[in-house]
Length: 344
Image (cartoon, rainbow, N blue to C red; front, side, top):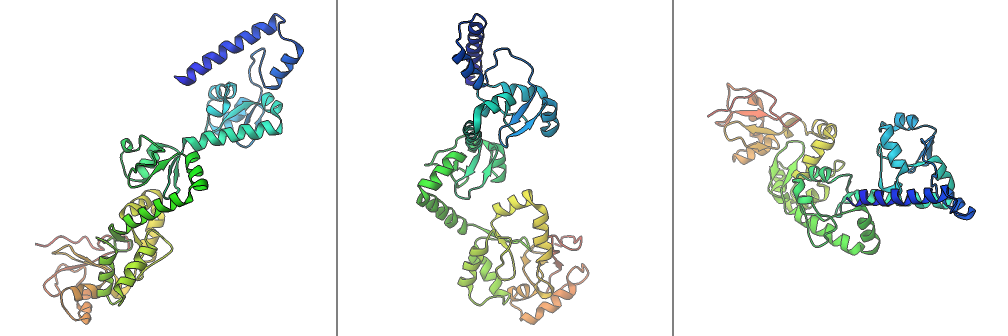
């Protein structure tokens, strides 16, 4: 509504100026200043436009349309706007070529600064992580929450989805003036995250926390320092380039975002980094329990570690059991290698 009102006021103002010009009520100095500002005394079809973001010139509206895919009419309306930094078409802001030339170097830089400021004000930024999203819907989808929870930004005393949400301008101001506040928010988020569940990326097994994951690794003989392994898991969590105990680790939320944003990377992590041989994950068909290795399954049953070989021999074979159970191997993508029916 405010934009429409501003447009009507500008149109009325422009009509009064044109009327004064036609009747000779403007002196030469006033006319020159208005022309330098890009005012059109006789509205005409735009012959050329400039994309404000990069200063690229298009000789015709059709050329701008071919470049951006935006409708010619939308580009024309955006370029004629009294405040071109507030109206966009095809993901860019436009200005008539003549008006752009009249601005001068300093005026062009100022206009580009206004466009950038408008873009930053439209962003949804997670203050803790620095992730920026163009729309509220994208931010909500990325963090797995309903859009209704993200109706407001710049509420520094409120968290949505465990984090603070601000626009790009506010985030830049906080980062420059209050770095300690950002550090405190990140520390709180990290501490909250570390108390939560953790998922082994290769096997897909979820543990209540990093300590339980470390205890499972201790069963496999992959570590003797359980507290140290817990800290290492927390250190490499949500980092696709680092491992702990031979595995990648992630929070469920991060893993869900990765599956949505880059499924190819997730597939590579699971397929290219899965431990081999005796360290392959295995599932007990009767109980549904997944163990990160054959050895872990044997130890969990109270058997000698060497019993893992017997479990491996019958894995995937519905006609044979080992120690009273049927077993199924887990493929690199986290699914059973065989179409194994559930028993019991």
